Amino acid sequence: MSQIKLIPTKLKGKVSVPPSKSLAHRAIIAASLAKGISRIDHIEYSQDIKATIGAMEALGTIIEQHEDYLIINGNYTFTKNNTMPGVQIDCEESGSTLRFMVPISLVKENKVRFIGRGQLGKRPLDTYYEIFERQDIGYLYRENVLDLNVVGELKPDLYRIPGNISSQFITGLLFALPLLSFDSIIEITTPLESKGYIDLTLQVLKLYGIEVVNHEYKQFIIRGRQEYKARDYRVESDFSQAAFYLVAGALGNDVTLLDLNLDSLQGDKATIDFLKQMNCEIIENDEGIKVVSHGLKATTVDASQCPDVIPVVSLALALASGHSEVINAGRLRIKECDRLQATVEELNKLKAQAVEHESSMELEGVGTLIGGNVSSHDDHRMAMMLAIASTVCKEPIIIDNKGCVKKSYPSFWKDFEMLGGKIDGGNL
Image: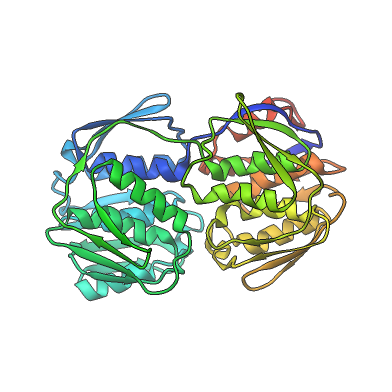
């Protein structure tokens, strides 16, 4: 792990927001399940996206990787003899890859080993284990380490899934169930969180020819024996990455974001609503989108639909006048790190006033942040939040692991410097 020292300075300029990781995962999978050849444009090869590409290749898909696009041939998906000696899927640290691929890999009788690293083995998979038990699918796993072996075939069924767990389980089933021999139903047994991610899944499924009947997010009816249709697709830019620059604008930086779709279904677009609540203005012109603050004011932020943007939104709350709260934030604890604890801990190192609770945090706004040694907790979103924090600190920030941004945004430090960010020791 390598440290990085950031000298406080304001960012100024234009930045092209990276492609949506959420949509890229989904498009790669849908194209791989389609008979025919598809082209996926606007691709960035983060570790998570590489993991999903590798996962589909393990199932027989032929994928050509070009500089910023993919050519995907789904004609050979599932055609390999995967049962002997079996398939290995390396999910790296990608929760999306793991939870999407478990049901997809079992569309046909299969023997699959899932491996990964980092905190991925600690992310709960009980929802799938319950399905395995009910459908007599064999499985074996190790505690706290991702080493999951599964043998069997997914069956059409009535799937009862709690809505307050990761939507990734629902997405994985929505991709797999249309390919089974009979109809299935997914019934959501508690109020659904992260609806925005389900909207993205349904959008991509429809584009690739799959019909799902959505009864107010309480029940999804999936007809069996459907066929994915090959098509070309351009991945739109990512609001979860845009959130760092949107908050930068709220903190007095002058950043214009290019190629951002304000009509997007991405749940992380809620960052714009949060900033508006905090007395910020969103300015849209021919060049792009920028945020201007008219004096940050405290507010209450509901994290249930967009947990990934909470660390950087909390940075803005830490500097907002008054008492703020982040509520319904329990799922932050099962990300790449315990992001609820880590966000409070690292902001307080910078002399913010944040208090952690079981599923929430409180913040009392302060006028400025100090700087010093902080930790990314080996989490890409924590590292990027702290980089934006450096622009409003009195003293330099030293982050312990700059390389973790490769998980979702490999070019982050390059873009940070391009916008005028100062990294001690010269260019990366």
